[in-house]
Amino acid sequence: MQTEGQPRDRITEAGAVIAGWTRLWSRLLVVHVAGPDGRCRGCPSSLHASPRWPCRLAELAGAAQAAHRAQCGSDGSA
Image (cartoon, rainbow, N blue to C red):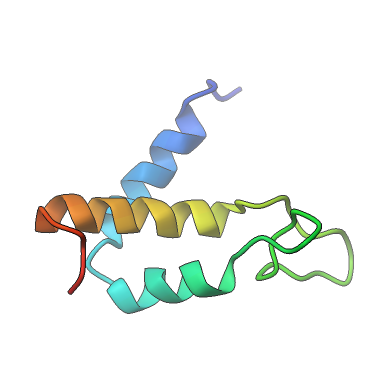
């Protein structure tokens, strides 16, 4: 069984790994947004309801953006 903080830590670590891939995470931030029902618009599924926002990909993209900003020491614009 995972501890409570472990999934977030893994997303933070993965975000740091992809921080330099600005085109990837910036596109994820554009696509994976909340819909009017509070579910992710970038995670459609014909089998089950989309996950609540922020989905894991939105969290990953946000972590990558934060890591990129920290690495740049600024607002993160490339």
